[in-house]
Length: 276
Image 1 (tube, helix red, strand yellow):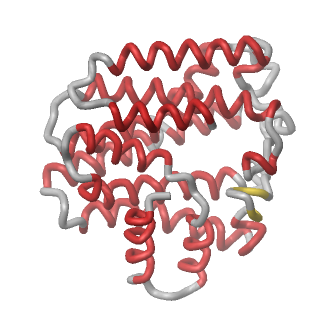
Image 2 (cartoon, one colour):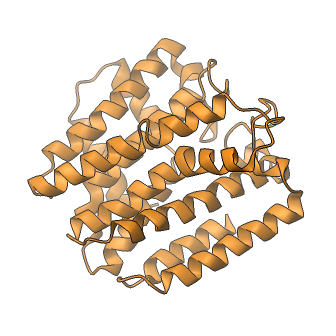
């Protein structure tokens, strides 16, 4: 756990009005692995920029990630009652409070960046645009739409890849692009593809874990099979998916050789991803 970043989140929440939405926000944010923020910090350190420079943007991204999980778990979506090793927010606080809390976290993400003292106006605009693009209808929301309207009998590999590219990879693209904007680099194509590659690996791992790990190990419901979702395992068996994930890690390693920053910190983080 990155205690400095956790304190940064706590300090922000401590400055908000005390009410049921704040309590629910604290509950929902507790226990997150913060993998996407850690990508931001790893790339920044590889650029010789203090990770603290990314804290506000990383907090905004973590708020969006948490809001998406809150809404994912709702009865109208995946109908899951376990998240981050404890009852889902709508189980702990009621469904209406969960919806409002998700809405608040999403809205707060843009406020955090706009009020940050660590970014100039150009950087703020770029980060907010990236957050809204890849978390919105050209990213995560589009992927979610495809996900809820597809099923395990819809054997379309192109659709599966499109779901992964948007629903999962969208937020990873944000995590890779934020350091680029902070560093004032003009390498959008490289960092967007980097986020895409990590996102596909992450989703394929989740599809694998749905059948080889328990809910206790994962700290969440493994509901894709129950909900008859379209996953990678409609196209290959467990061994085949393991080989695909290894192939994707190998391709990512080659891609990192082209990076303009020191990839040591990011590679350490990706090793943790591989071993999770």
